[in-house]
Image (cartoon, rainbow, N blue to C red; front, side, top):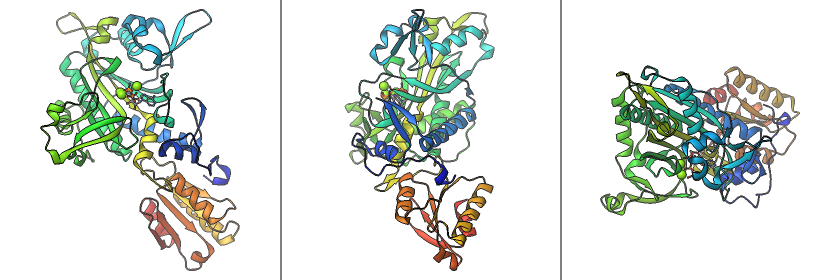
Length: 439
Ligand code: ATP
Ligand code: MG
Ligand code: MG
Ligand code: MG
C-alpha cells in the first residue's frame, strides 16, 4: 500500500476523551472513530488488525476441530423466554420491537440460538461430539462504555459452543478450548493467564477467564509468580487426546491464579509469600462448562446407546476479538506509539522515502516494495511529500515491526537503513539484505 493512496487519518493532538494508552493510540493512529457511545467505526488500519486477529482465532479454532458458522446479530425474544434469560439478563440487553410488535433483541451472546439450532437437527449420540462457533458482533448496553474498544457496547466476539453426551466428554471440550486459547493468544504476542473465575449470568461451576496483565485492566488479579514462566510455545497437541489436553490444563491451572471474584484468602496464604503477586488484568476470553442448563430448559436431547433420550452437556467459550486490539496495545507500546507483535501487525514493514521525487530514491523504494510484495509480505510505503520527521513519527505511531529508510545519501553507498520498532536499533545494509532480514 502506498500511503498517498491510503486512508490513514492520523491525529496530531491527543484526544481528551481517551483515558488509557490503547484508546489514545487507536484514535491517534486513525484506527477507529467513535460513532456513538461505545460504538465504533473501524477505519482501514484498525480493520486490518481486526481481521488479522480474527484470522488467528479462526485458524486455531479449526485446528482444534471446531466448526465455523454464522448466526445473526438480531434474535427473537421467544428463545430467551424459553431459557428464562429474557427477564434475567437485565438492562445490558438491548431490546427491540419490530413493526409487528414482536420482541427482538440484539444478541449479547448466543447460547439460546445455538441450542435451538442443535435441537432442530441433532437426534443421536452418534453425531457427537460437536463444537460450533462463530465470530459475530454482540451488543451489551454497558452502563459505562469506556476505554475505546475495550469496553464497547457493540463488540466483536468469537463464541463457541460444545455439545457432548457426557460430562466427561464436555470437560474434554473445555480443556480443548483452554489449549487452543493458549495458542491463540501466544500467536498474538500476548501472555493471557487462565484464572479461576465466576460464571455470572451464563451459569455453571467450571470456568476460567484469560487475563492479560496490564495496569489499566479492570479486574484485580492474584497469582503465583511461577505462572508467568509458563509458555505454550510450539508444542504439538493432539486435540482428540483427552490425556494431552488434561495435562495442559493441569500445567496451566495448578498454580494460584484468580480474579477478585473468586479470590480466597485461605488458599492464597498457602502460596509462598515471595511468589504472591497482586496486579490488574484485562479479560480477553472465558471458557465455561455449564452442563445441561440450556439443554434441560430448551429440550436439547439426543438418544444414547441404550436408546434413552438424554440432555446434552454443553459449554460456551468466548474470545473478545475487538477488545484484543486494546489489550495488545496496552501490553506492547512505548511513548511514541504502538509496537505491533509480528503476528497481528497491519503491515509487515514501512518504507520511508526521505526524498520523494528523487529518481534514485523513488526507484529503490519501488524495488523494495516489489520485493516484499513478491514474497507475500505487505509493505506500507510512505511516498508522501513530507518532512522526514513527520514520516518517522507516523511510522512510530502505527508501530510496524520494521522500517526501511531510503535516501539519496545512503544509496550513493549502496545502503538503506533498517530499524526495528521494538528495539529502536538501526543498521545500514544493502536493500536486498534488508529484505532478507524482514522476511
Ligand atoms: P467483562 O467482565 O469485561 O464485562 P464478560 O465477562 O461480561 O466481560 P463474557 O460474557 O465472558 O464477557 O464474553 C467473552 C469475552 O468478550 C470477554 O472475555 C471479553 O474479552 C469480551 N467482552 C465482553 N464484554 C465486552 C465489551 N463490552 N466490550 C468488548 N469486549 C467485551
Ligand atoms: Mg460484562
Ligand atoms: Mg467478566
Ligand atoms: Mg467473562
